[in-house]
Length: 329
Image (tube, helix red, strand yellow):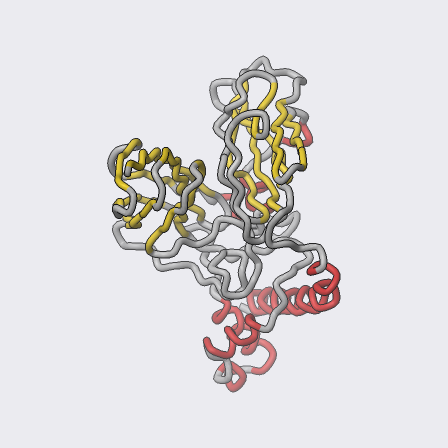
């Protein structure tokens, strides 16, 4: 028990050290952030082998904008080489850093060739180079660490035992709705309950008991903890994520305005307090339905063909689902 308390104390100490560093660094960082007009950096995240001998190359991106969500059709401004230009990449880009967004399968004899993703956004041309070099081999621990579920270079028996969620969309994968017509979207998510969801109030109580005993615990309330987190700067030395299972539906392809109800948690690294993102300090994991069914209503304001992307994320690992929606007048 004493070792558990000591571990909680160390976590709290690291939290305050990181917050202090953020106070010093935040004025410098904020000068280089933008709402719109900036480019997108495509990113090669790594690769992992498949049982049939093929390989999956993993890509994400950094949208330098905090608000602008560019739409870039597959073509000369959004393409892969060599081979087919369309490798299933997004054409609608969410703000800021999006890691491990999609995977491209390459054959077993790919060898030392490079797979290049080219993006041109707001007049700036950028490329990401995929390769099967050993240094880029990815496993579950790398994913959990890179997305902030684990501390840099750390793991635990729990994290090593974690399995990704399993996402199953109910109904057809291709649907047709009219503009303004609410479309019901039901998704079943199964998970093993690992990692243990983050509870900042419980962490604060453990720390208070360690340093001050039962009397100190009495002063720890949910409101006090929320106020402390609200005052904590959002910039951290390394990315830090709040663990907990959630499902988030978003636009993957399609240029119109799409509304999701209820509001979806952000799958991108929005570190601002109250940003409804697992990387934001005030976010708490939602309570999962007992039957695992998640219901969302989706409404489109323009006709066209859309691809919606659903990501189930337990904090450490994820599973993706997609549906295509043909929207008519």
